[in-house]
Length: 84
Ligand SMILES: [Zn+2]
Image (tube, rainbow, N blue to C red; front, side, top):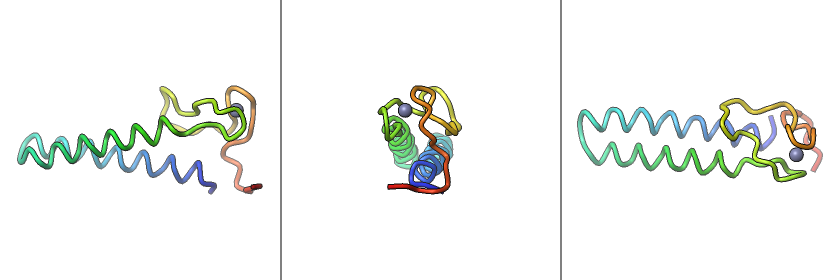
């Protein structure tokens, strides 16, 4: 697993946690709801910053899964060997 895949997993985790907290908070406490909304925003920001290391193309715009290769330049994304 490389750093992009890890970042992708974190963004999904944070977003799902935020959705859960926001739903729970809307039924119980308002503070909980705002924390959830904050987490969703953080997850979204992480997703926006997930870009191809080669051409800077946004990789997960309008999608949940990380592509194996960059749709723009074909640079391998989900490659397990990290050459940096
Ligand atoms: Zn690219």
